[in-house]
Image (cartoon, rainbow, N blue to C red; front, side, top):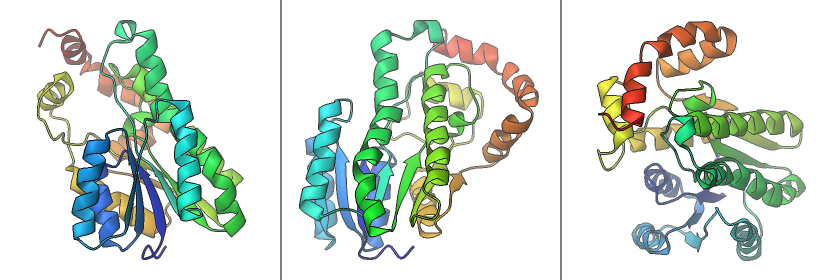
Length: 267
């Protein structure tokens, strides 16, 4: 796909991956429609990109609120007469043993990670089908292929997003509209604190810089890839888990006591 001149809607635009992805897309010459729940952060990023001479349209939206998902789609359609690419990046994580999760926490996780991308896709898809071209990019996780202790609710939401992406891609075959599912591994946070980061250091988990992940997403988009698993050996482990999950059970079992300690706040 030639990105120059394309209209791209990016949700979660000011987050850890979102900001470098917005910058990378802007360098490709796209018309960038950015959405995020923080108007202040969105305004700062808009000013930065416009100083670079880029065409940017900021639209604040809290995707945890179904009405705001619909309003985002309506605003995008009204102000841009449709888009060429939708990148569903906005999301959240949760690191807890499952019995520690709350009802509200699980519902918010699913609403942002799974339901909002599905509903936004549903609302914008008719235009893409009418123009006979376009691409939907859903940002998942390696945990959407490997169910990992301490991330049961999060893994479930990303498994669902991966299944949605696969089914929709097959459904849209021949329409000119493609679907790309991207699965990053652990992304190095901007603030190196919190139980998740301490646990990943203790387990010597491989990490990627947000800028590298952003470049991989842009590359997958340009290449019209159906799937993009980022990082080795995690990409291999995801494939193995799909064929022989018992092998991954043993791999994870060796880490389980450490995961439980961090989840329970013992470390």
